[in-house]
Length: 68
Image 1 (cartoon, rainbow, N blue to C red):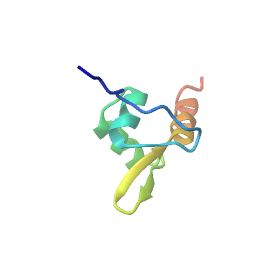
Image 2: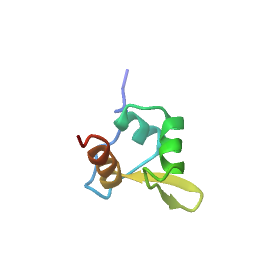
Image 3: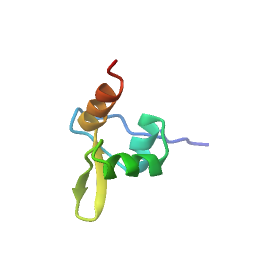
Image 4: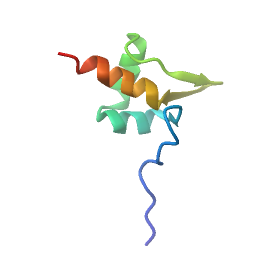
């Protein structure tokens, strides 16, 4: 049985992740990710109708959210 990795390795700070992949990285639900974007806490990248999240944006959010 062949298994595939749950998430591809990032190519750098500009790597783009789907909603499911970004939610897995942040350890939250996809709905919570949508709420973060709707509140302006997280800025998604739109490519046509597709929504993606840059690794640099996910890190920016984590850094801001974990500040004392």
